[in-house]
Length: 322
Image (cartoon, rainbow, N blue to C red; front, side, top):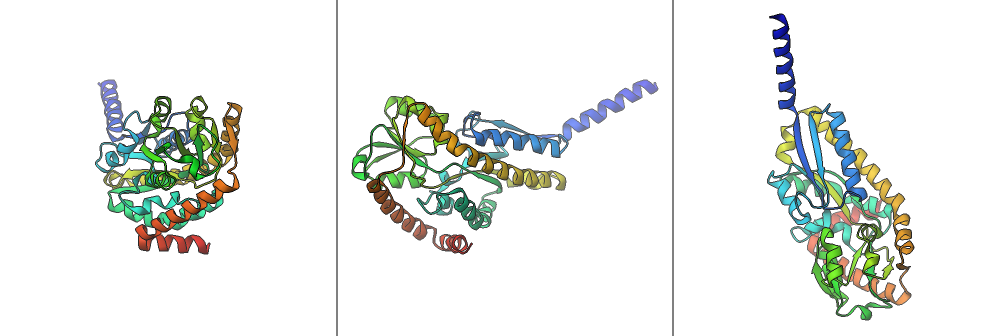
């Protein structure tokens, strides 16, 4: 009888532990081989350890659970409880989200970090109002331009079908006389292979992940801006956790942001070298191209400042004062 009671007690305790544990799915838009996704997996593992297994986060890379443009809405509505998305992809709903994609405002890792600190608190407030909690954000390496031929200045871009991934890149395409085509990262290779897109702006990381050398020939390292991916949680789900689990999420997020940013810095030169090693022509922009892009960047900065209004003014003041 005692043995039976012992077994029953053990089973009940095991059942109670299983019932207490939570599983959160974390959809991510980029491939498992990408450092953002790898960093997300390390974050998920750290949360599991910190919570003693009470909170399990399962990463779904490559847009396999939700496509990139579906992730934020899925987390807001509780279809997924945590997710990652390119921050500037939401610029159309609020100009604030495009602060990291203003060309040549912050074109180094150091400047990008200062800009992030200037914008972070206001961004967290906006997300909170949208039923989301900001956890962390990690930059991409500086953005460059990919083409299938030599480009000496903006006039050479006329009529090119240009893959846009946010409002900023769409505007840049239009100002350069190109035709913007909205395409998610997971669909980029197919778009290039079929001619739906003929050029795009992104980091050397995306070029490497998507083996862009199979379709395009030139990468211009213009060091335009460093967009960020950010990880966010459904606010209702976050607030339903106990204090320990919430603290674990916050602490692991701090580590993930630091580790991911360090990894981006380490990989930036390596990615460019890989493009060249696989046959791409990797160049700094000619003086005329640099001048033309600076004019476009100034126009875009003015537009963003006007659209974002007081938020832009506050962010720029904080950024420039550091």
